[in-house]
Length: 167
Image (cartoon, rainbow, N blue to C red):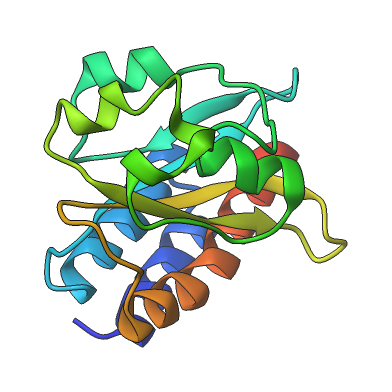
């Protein structure tokens, strides 16, 4: 699969009015495949109350997703909540060294994750719609390839979320 093929398939799903979760699951799974399974992807979507909800995280367990459900965007909490609050990419190479994870690090670390990063998903006007997060099993920065893949898929996720809001 290529990034272009992943994007094209997602756009077809959007045109076919597929459920938002299906489109986002395709994007998350595509990111994992395109990054050679070195990441586990999680797309969170801001709900009408401004809280982060699971959009699609096909390879994260339900109990983990329940534990992070309804996180409020906050610049000092995790990577996804911080990215949603700031509208900026947030990197956490190592949960043990990042104060944003002081209250939550036990959750991803219990699954064998050591670091993460998150890119905000924004509409064309710059409003944050959600986040595209990636978890790592080792302490590290995202690779150039991982940054490229997510950067290419985020605009399609934004289209899908906007289409879901309009429906």
